[in-house]
Length: 495
Image (tube, rainbow, N blue to C red; front, side, top):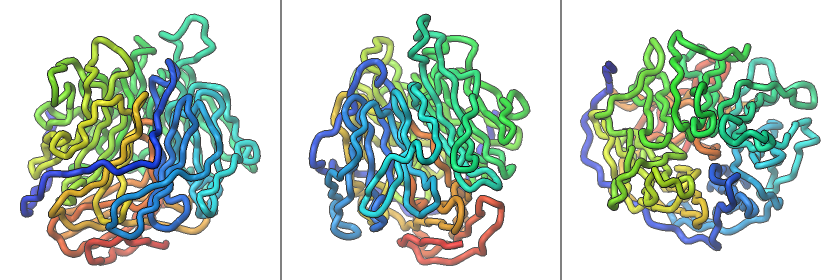
C-alpha cells in the first residue's frame, strides 16, 4: 500500500482550464502506413533565440515542418508561420539538444531509416551534420530517444530506441529490434548495442534515485514483444539491467514516459502511457510503486461519448495549467489505427490535480477533447503570458495548436539555467522552488514523451504566492545559493 504524504496548502479557488484553437498557416498531417502507426512527435525550442518558442513537427510520409513563432508581444494572441527547413521524410519525431555546445539548439531527428543530426544556428537555420559529427544514423525504425551528459565528456551521450526489426522475415511479432547508445569519443560517437530490445516507444535518462547518476528507463510495447519482455532500466555507466532492489519490471503496451516530483520528496514520479490503464508510479525509498486507482490517473476509458472500449495513451506531460501550484497532467490519446478492441473516439485527457493529490478530468471543459488519433504533444508557454499552451500532433488528421486562456490563474515563475562549456543547457540539473510552506522540484531532462521533447524555461505555478525563492542543483552536484524573485517572470540563471 502506498501512503501519499502530499503537502496540503490553503489557496483560493482557481478557474477551470480554458483553451481556444489557434490558427495555423496550413494543415500539417502526420501520415503514412504501418511504419507510421506509431510516432508523430513535436520538438519545441527557441530556434532564433528571440524568447518565443518555435516548434518542429514530424510528418511521417509527409515532410517534417518548422513552425516559427510570430506572436507580436508577450501576452498577445498566439501566431505562427511556416519556416524554411531541410526536406526530410520518414520522420517519426525529433528532440532539441545543444550537441556541439555553441548555445544554439540542434535537433536529433528519428526516422524510419537513417537518423539525422541537424545543427541549429541563427535565424532558425538547420544543417545536416550527421557525418561531420561522426554519428552512425543506421537504418532502423527509430521511435524513442533520450540524452545525458556523462562525467568528463564534452558532448552528450545519445540513446536511440528502435521498434520492430523490419528486415526480420519472421516478424513483426517477436521481432523487436535492438536499441543503441552513442557515446562521444574524439570527433565522433561510438555505438554500443543495448540488447535485448522489446520494441521501445519511449526512453528517459533520469536520476530517479538521486544517486547523482542518470539511468536509462525504457518503455516497451508488448504488442510486438508478446512475451518475455518488460519495461527496462539500464544502470549507468556500466550498462547493466536492473532487476529487483527497487526495480520490479512490468509488462505494458508502453508508449510514453513523463516524470515529475508530485509528493515534494525530491524524487520524480513516473507516468507510463499504455493501452487501457495509464500507470502512474510513485518513487519511494524502496523503489517505484504503482499509484492507487483512486488517485484518478488511470484514465483507462473515454470520458465523453458512448465508446466504452479501452483508451490508447501516447504522449504524457506534466504541467501546472492554471498556475494554482498543483501540477496537472495531459495525455494524448488515439487508436493505433483501426484496432477493434480499443476506443476509436478517444479524447485527449487533461487531468487537474487538487489539494488532496487526486486528479480530475477537465479535458472537455477545457476545450481540448479532440478525438483525432493524437500522438506527440507539448505544453509550453508560446505567447509568454505565464500560461502553458498546447500543441498536439495527430495521425491522418491536422496538427492542433491551442492557446491557454484560463481566467484568474495563479502566479508563476519560469527558470532557465545556463552554464558555460559542455552541457550549456544544464541537462541533469534540478530546479528547486519554494514559496511559503510549499516547495517544488523539477529535473531538467532530454527525452521521454512520445517522440516529443522541449527545451526552454522550467515553469512553476505558485498559486497566490507573490514571490518565491529558487536554486539550481547543477549536474555536477554543486548548488547555487537560494535567490528570491517576484512572481510572474522568467529568470535566466547563469552559473
